[in-house]
Image 1 (cartoon, chains in turn yellow, blue):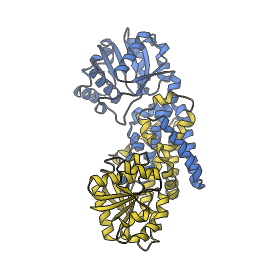
Image 2 (tube, rainbow over the protein chains, first blue to last red):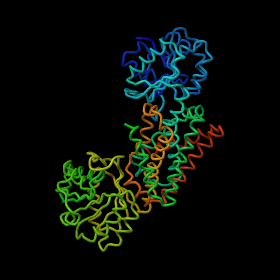
Image 3 (spheres, chains in turn red, yellow):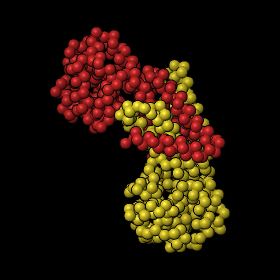
Image 4 (spheres, rainbow over the protein chains, first blue to last red):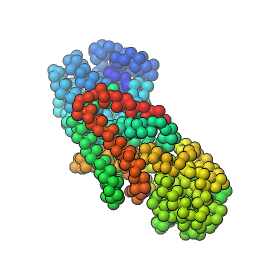
Length: 280
Length: 280
């Protein structure tokens, strides 16, 4: 068992801390959080054993998990890496190319492993941390050739302990795929929420009628802007590509309705049904 | 307890049959289905006690539940109503104005109650019927003033037995709201599936990376075109209005990214977060 520092005691960092304790992967878990209320809550909720300053925590740990919004992670990574000696540093952010690029500025780049556990909920903060997160989901490790073998090995053990299967890819490929399987879903959900709120603002009927399908499509619209604005910012080009494609797919549906072309509408739907081969 | 006929033994009709039997609301449940395999499966799965022809089933029942795609329901309603005497006929379709208009052609319009239980899944057919459906969801009753008091009363008892709360509104209002809380979610989901399938057709990474958020947003894209094309057709004007609004909301996100206007992007997301007051 090792000592682990979790920087950012929110949804991902907190849930990971819970899992690492349960799996007896971590002997001690130290939390670092610039938000004092979050730091306090993380101790009270027993996500972490103690709170420390960044440098103290690094010095006392074998593994450092960076679980802050991607723009903060990008800013912090060099400082963290420059401080480490034998420790392993991983990040868990949704975008991988910018942090890999930043990490390359440190003399200790090889102690860093860029990862993305593909799990989340629409909630944030220490109170949103849950037991049993991550299980049976995929975790991506990017550019493993830039990391020391022992660092990759410890990271693989960590994700195995969480019950995740590993996927290896280049950071740039990851960011493109993430735009498709995660970022566009969030934009769609935000835009759908705004569509409904715009048009239905004076009517309570929607409160009553909103059902399972609506909830599942709009659920992600509860997601936190402090987390998502930096993601969209860092993955701007990929997200724009996907968003353009999505808008043109929506226009096909629009055109079918406008032209009463219901056989083509049926084809569009039947094509969409092929998503069954991706979704379990 | 009464005798109930379910016309259409799929997801909705089948799940309703299961619930009505469990709640001891129905003494006998007769199934009518033009698809012979579905009819056979409905008996084997014990959704219904027996299969009968349409007219025989009507003659032997106190309550007839019309649970077929909305275009078929619109075509069948006058024939069914013209056949009834004291029986009550309800439909459970996702669009209410066209069937109310069609029903008005029958001398027995007042035996009909137009309803929409706001529950469903992305699956279809008798095998998709589930126990415990409908509970705690809303059921809409439209234009109740056009129905006999005893017919409305029986319908209210039925939905109470299913554990649903009732919402009363005009058919035209229902169809507008349904476009917002259900139909647009499906179009978004279909289009999102097509976006991903279009761009990622030669890459397995997405299979591995697809996570909870993606699944929840794209789940509805598995929905059946035989059910959904007629819904979009019948609700064309409302769906087009909502779709246009949705596309313009998506364009706002696009414009923020193109112009690097991240403070406005944050505002759009924070506005979308207000959906929390609608979603439980």
